[in-house]
Image (cartoon, one colour):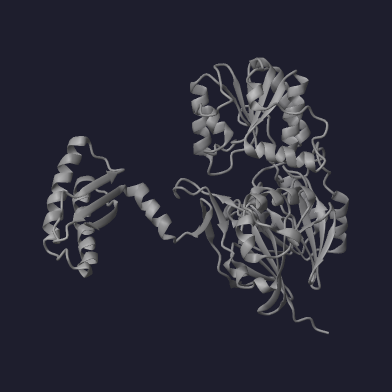
Length: 555
């Protein structure tokens, strides 16, 4: 009997940028599919969006189909894969599937937001299985720069898919299970219709390297440092965290954790049975009493985050941790694209203060969590997919991955971007539609779209400054006193500002005479005229058009 159902893949985030991963799989008749979501992460923004640190994928397409949404499956606990879940899940309200370590961090996210997910969170054991509607899903243990990373083998009536998530081939990950190479090869032997695969390090020749090698090198670095050591890395890298603990102990130093995320990951890892054989960390308040040559601090803020512990320490704003001349800071992480400016500013400030800086530029203290080309070649040889769909990368990464898959003889490589709806089966793989996609910004505790009036106002103020004018109107409809003018963010000295105020006061009096101040219907026209005329005065002097607010107060 002919199967008229379609097997669909559609990324809403992560295909065209690093981060913000959100992938949809659908199965069913045309325009009547059942859906699952794989990962639901955040992305990081640059200084062009003032006041915004995070962005999330716009879920509108799947929100319109939430009655047909069967669940969210999480491959691992990095923020670019789970960071948006507490923000977007309340609108989706579907089951969430995750392995124990990821599930524990998810619970904490919802607890912070005071959201009760109750029985919606389903914990899947490592290498476990779950059947959701037409999707029969096997978790496959991989290695990455976090505990419990998983690929997902997705069996459907049209064939098997492999969604790799983030991965690398680490033969000695030090903590957590090894990559299940045997299971991956068996999946390949059974036949794989399509592999949806990480593209992050496709430009990197060779292999990514092992955490064991980092530990050996880190110990050598520690042995050659005589004064205080501060290490900053991704809090989520539990293997790296254990490395710093172990190295500190071997060189006779105590260790103190600094930063909320470090403590959260440490406690979560302990709760899940990891980090059992290490010496407990000192509280930073107690660590102050330890001699400089007997202490190591492990801090958040490896990407120069404004609220990260490292940034606060460098700017002498941390209450318990400080740096002296001759101390050493080790940046045990790679620089995420877009963070170079922030991090190099910190590096320069440290060097200027005679603090030693060690990074991946001058020492072997980091390995990537993503596969180099040799590891990618291994995965393709094991899985032998008929269709290759590169994801998790900028356009340049995915195009290079597409060319790489082509060179390996993959019969049907595909090149896609966010919003492309691909019919994987039946028939030849084909982009059949372009669905709504985009990004939303996390503004404080709210999610706004990129067309938000608040965001536009903030950008305007950031680029052009602010002018606020208050007019006091008497009962008789006259200006009761001189207008109150407030200007911020414009390049005036005091003398120029006084002169500008006099000119603006004259313009306000002149413009106000053209309107009846007793007639409230004239208010909007008066305000519009004042905004236009006062902006012209400012523009003539500064070539800036400030965000302008006019307030009328009647007494």
